[in-house]
Image (cartoon, rainbow, N blue to C red):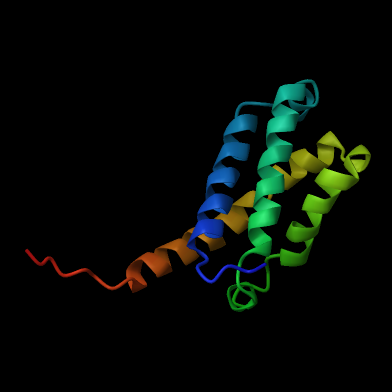
Length: 123
């Protein structure tokens, strides 16, 4: 269900992209394939990214048609329900293309930060 305030899902996406990237930092694909703990951690990050993407307003998604929003949302179903279909190569490749989504999320967060009205300090 889309959120009225997209800040929370945007932050969740940003934070979990950063986590997933940090988990694979310094790994080769071969090393990644051999590290079950890291694989599970990355899957969890991708599940959260998927779920958070579902909570973004349609208007926001329409502003960024180059992002495969349906695929991102649908991937969560694969991670949760069709887990036997998940390959480590698929996970690896997904983490490697997250910077496109990260750029959009960072842009949206910055835009919303600049749009917030400044509070007057009354004492």
